[in-house]
Image 1 (spheres, helix red, strand yellow):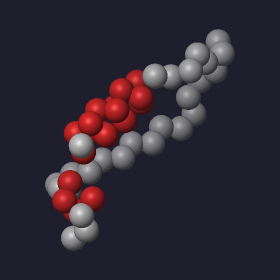
Image 2 (cartoon, one colour):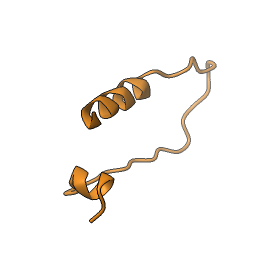
Image 3 (cartoon, helix red, strand yellow):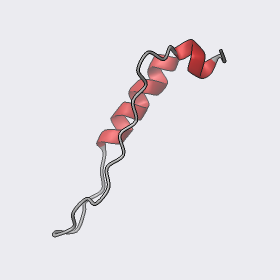
Length: 45
């Protein structure tokens, strides 16, 4: 089930609305989870 949720989130993140011409990205946010297990995220520590 967790895999299904992650695949759904990944697929949804690829869909972007059409941006008006001339608009540029000002900020970029990058979130990384280095060394985090899924048990720590969904099941506590």
